[in-house]
Length: 449
Ligand SMILES: Cc1cc2nc3c(=O)[nH]c(=O)nc-3n(C[C@H](O)[C@H](O)[C@H](O)COP(=O)(O)OP(=O)(O)OC[C@H]3O[C@@H](n4cnc5c(N)ncnc54)[C@H](O)[C@@H]3O)c2cc1C
Image 1: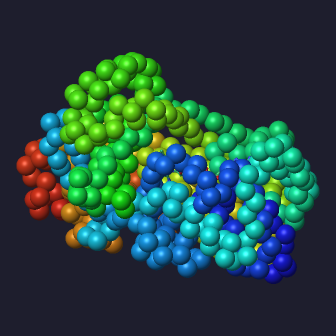
Image 2 (image 1 turned 90 degrees about the vertical axis):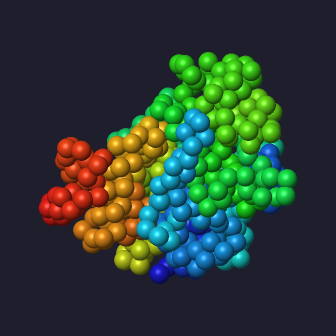
Image 3 (image 1 turned 180 degrees about the vertical axis):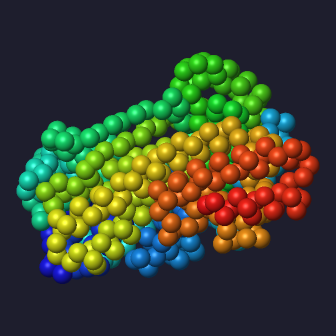
């Protein structure tokens, strides 16, 4: 393969991983990141923010030999959901088969590791260089530092890995026949912390993702290696209750005391965090095409920003890297054909995971507290355990089946919904769910998949 000069805008999770893939192929890779080097400056305000890493992300990390390192050094496996009701009673739902887990990893820790690995592979990362303008014909970008000094960089190829508010995509928006939509959902989020106990211990079950489902909103918590939990309240901006209705600390406290009393009791810094941590918005970006002139391509959130409820944003961006790497093998030096194949293959999967993520929001906030929903999941899990080749639950298709495309998972999930509706409509299903009659019907229905 001919060696290329490649620029990447953005040294976030996806840009850093992409740079490693490209450098390993011998290309000269320069990454331009708008923010300062997190290794030198604390840019997260000291807060630990974590993400769920699952099989698609791990597969992409494995492609550059980093999966085990991430699992060993910075991951906490979460084997099940623990649901907290208003009274603090707990119920449980395994994520997959025995031993299957999603992994809580520190966003900043993972990003720092990828940046280090990129540099170790010969990538040059230019920090505090914000992309301001792009010439899509010539893959030339103008980057500006904090003092307003700018430089023009010409490359053979340019990737926009600059996130949901991508500057590279902004240049594409102005070109003919570029379709683009950006939608803010009604909910935003606020992060809060459950610190470790007095002896440095976890104050709730460690190897689990905790959820307080409350209908139109929910609180979740993921564990960190320092024995704290990062909690995220997903909450409407308007209405009652909402960020705007809880317009004083006293109201917020009273609300938490009513809805999330067991969590509030573990949040000694609630007052300070409620006042100081931002309310952040959530949006969905869809666009097409993802590439221009065989020279410029979008990847990760720049091409498909989704809501975080399936824990798949980073995983899907990492999967873009897996797909690109495979296509590079296939197309050799024909980057124009490869970029076309990339966007045609990945667009339906980006759209599918965007839809799946919204569906999962409803599931998490509404249904994990619903007896019918929990029963349906139990029936599916039991059946899939006994007949693994006949039925894989949708959650497992998305999370633990890295070789099944998101678009295939979504299509299969829709079919399964229809079939499970027939099972749930069986008389006295809550009493007979474990019976031979249900199993026989499931076997017959599974033939339709
Ligand atoms: C609350 C929340 C929870 C989430 N949880 C999960 C989860 O559990 N699992 C999961 O898989 N995903 C999760 N996600 C999604 C995940 O964070 C994103 O999908 C992922 O960060 C996308 O990576 P990226 O590299 O494409 O973009 P980013 O991580 O946004 O990185 C973009 C980089 O580009 C830089 N940049 C931006 N503009 C410019 C510019 N003009 N010039 C130069 N550099 C620029 C930025 O500084 C940044 O470093 C979550 C998201 C949110 C909001």
